[in-house]
Amino acid sequence: MPWKNGLGRTTEIARAPASGDGFDWRLSIASIDRDGAFSAFAGCDRTLVPIAGGGLALDFDGGETLRGELFEPMRFAGDRPCFGRLLAGPARDLNVITRRAAARHDVAILTGSTTQATTGNVSFVVGVYGSLTIATNDGRWRLDVGDALRIDGHGVALRLMAISEPARAALVSIALRPPP
Image (cartoon, rainbow, N blue to C red; front, top):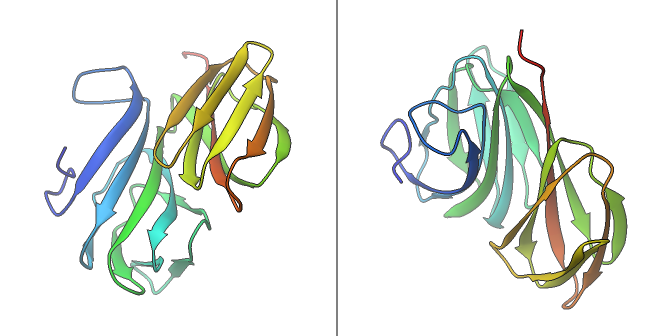
């Protein structure tokens, strides 16, 4: 689907609600092939993680710059005007957006074989490099680059086992806020 500002494209992995114009949270992977302004998302927080290419710099009004090399999460307010610069050619990024009034999120990059617990009401493990296996008490799944596994519930134990080294996955945890 096209970006909100029309300057690029994104592949939506999951969102809530599942359809309509607005969302409480969204998880996607975007392809960036040129420098340009990022879409503004009023009242939202964002995290971008470069997952392919040479990294990305985000320039904000007032002179602040966030620089993200591969697999380095960059967190920022979605309502801040922002200009993205490619550091070394085209890139792909994992993008998490949560509406502040509805949810908050955390993003962790997991490397190799490790154990981790979910911290949100809903979590996703997204393959971002290599191949790995995810095991929980409910089953076992293989994830390759771009694959995502949804896990509902707080404190679910995850066991990640690298199939190809160095495998990497993003653990995205979304904590829902109670309605006012």
